[in-house]
Amino acid sequence: MKIIEDDLSTPEIADFLRHHLADMNALTPPESVHALDLEALRAPEITFWSVRDGSSVAACGALKRLTPTHAELKSMRTDPTRQRTGLASRLLTHIINEATARGYNRLSLETGSAAPYLPARRLYEKFGFTYCAPFADYTPDPNSVHMTKPLRAAIPAPNQ
Image (cartoon, rainbow, N blue to C red; front, side):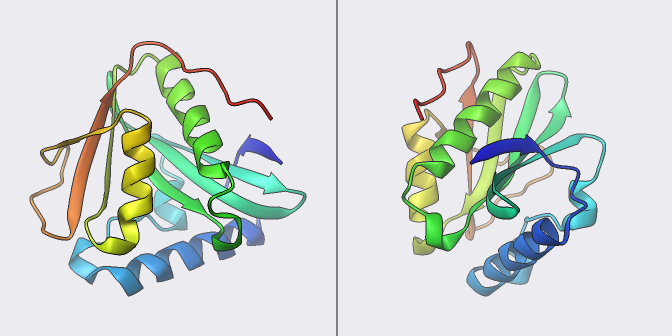
């Protein structure tokens, strides 16, 4: 498996993101879904990565520039058949290291507050994210939680 910067041009990634949006819409009221579609992920301030196993997509994640020193983690998803394999940790490590290398000193995210999002929140907590007030254009929402992490130095990639 390898992590690649993805140009979002293959049918495999389009299908993977369709499933991601469908899952978000099934778990969260529409007004509280902040997941980005394929076109929104092509914005110049966003860098998108996929984890590929051959031609299949195993996971994805993105980094969105908010300010010169603050970025947002977006579109983290692991294929349900590959959850709890360390793949999300590997990808999150990669994105945190990229954010640090780009000079960001803060990385934030929004995720769901409902029980199905608990594994994601635990992953983020394990990586040093703490709960915070809404940031950027987010507003208080009982279906969302916001987390942030100061960035100081790159963390080592896990051994594979």
